[in-house]
Amino acid sequence: MLAIEINNLVKQYKNGVRALNGLSFSVKTGEIFSLLGPNGAGKSSLINILTTFYKPTAGNVTMLGKDLINNPSWIRTQIACVAQQVSIDEHLSLMENMIFQSKMYKVEPQVAKERINSLIEKFELTSYLKYPTSSYSGGVKRRLDIAMNMVSSPKILFLDEPTVGMDVDSRKAMWDMLLKIRDEYGTTIFLTTHYLEEAEQLSDNICIMKNGKDLAQGTPSSLRNYIKQNILRIAFHDIEDIKKYKNDIKNACLVKFMNIHENSLFISVEESRTSLTLINKFLLEHNIKFDAIEIVEPSLEDVFLALTSSNKDLKEEWKC
Image (cartoon, rainbow, N blue to C red; front, side, top):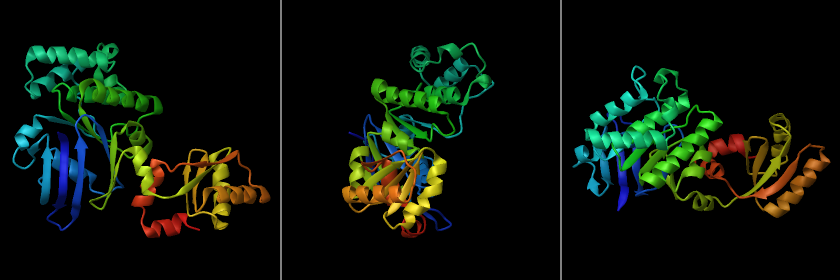
């Protein structure tokens, strides 16, 4: 059984804005599914529909085998949603927050007690029990927020950009937590994120959308086949060298588009091996300092940029 099945979903607001325009995709039970898209793609409207806050204008949504429109009350008992804004009450202790959540969802006291103790241990929150929640770091508050929403044992957990603003260590801890929720609890996770590396690392399946429509769907590896591009990576000593030389490389008309990540410049070319030789020669002849050059597979970020950027964006920012 599919966790979520969406067919030709439309959401049009009273002001005429059509946030969703024939969106279709499905989410398998027990997987981590990521929804990606630029700002204004319609992600928030979709989340509000799937969590029963909004009604769609047209189309069909089935969740856990039941129609969303006809069974909103039942569906609300099967899901949980963690928004970008942390929802814990800092006037309550960690345990009080967990107990309050269990009462909100009418979980039987004995069952709630067992679940709460298990979640505190699983998500490594035991050492924080003696401290006020107001003193927690942003990462720990987010972990507690998710643990609270697991007290009701939801079949589907919606997470809206759960790692935004986190440092590297906190983000890694959150990734481990999400994998644990999927693997040990069997919970379907519906994730929105702007961190493409996060989606690539965590997701079983991904949908990329823009202007209310689905552009591409599949596993992280299969999505790379959506663009038939040859990518070269040129590694520089630091980001300042990239800024210094990228226009020289672009003006040589050797590349289709380019993308910067950390200390590397990724460029799309017509034919990788021939271009590798030509660009390497160009760099050496023009005394452009670089650390390495290699042929690489397109990343999820390359796919995302190729699918969601308009022709004007490509022409003005990447094409030479």
